Structures are given as C-alpha cells and as structure tokens.
Length: 119
Image (cartoon, rainbow, N blue to C red; front, top):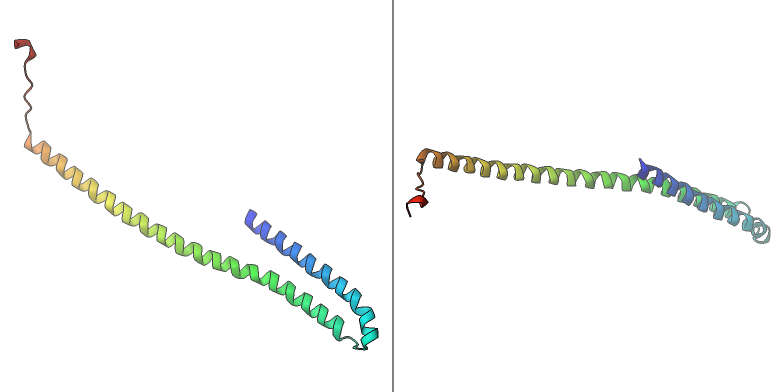
C-alpha cells in the first residue's frame, strides 16, 4: 500500500509542476499574442502541451505497474519451480537414506567390545 501512496504522490507533484509551468507560460503568452497577433494559437498550444504531459505522467505509471506485475509473476513461477525441484531432491535423498537404514537394521551387524577387565 505504501508503494501505491508514493506513486500517487509522485504523480501529484509532477502534475503540479507541469501546470505551474503551464500557468507561467500562459502569462507569457498574453503579451506575445498581442505582439505577434497569433490569436489563440500560443495559449492553446500551452494548454494542449500541459494536458498531454499530465496524461503521459498518469498513464506511464500504470504501464510500469503492469510491467512490474508481469515480472513478479515470472519470478514467482521460477521460484515455485525451484521449490518443487528442491522438494523432489530432498524427498529422494530421504527415501534412499531410509532404505540404507533399513538395510543396515536387517543385516544386524554385531559389534564386539573388548573386555577391559581381563587385561
């Protein structure tokens, strides 16, 4: 959840910067439109540029999130595969070990202990 809050905070800060600069550019456009007699073209270009930038900021984080999710799913699948492989290895080694113990028990090897009292 904290990652999501950080992402939204980043988007809000970036949007504020874009529109702050856009407002400053609109302030510059007012005298320029009277000098160049371009009419509404310059202010419209500023508004469209700021709007497009805002959309790009808010959509780019969605793409990166979906990319991160896809990468996480691939990593999870790889980890699950490794776990299954390790479980197979461990269970086969335990099975072999149990067979060896059973074989040793069935052989009933007698150990002779020297009698230290006779020396």
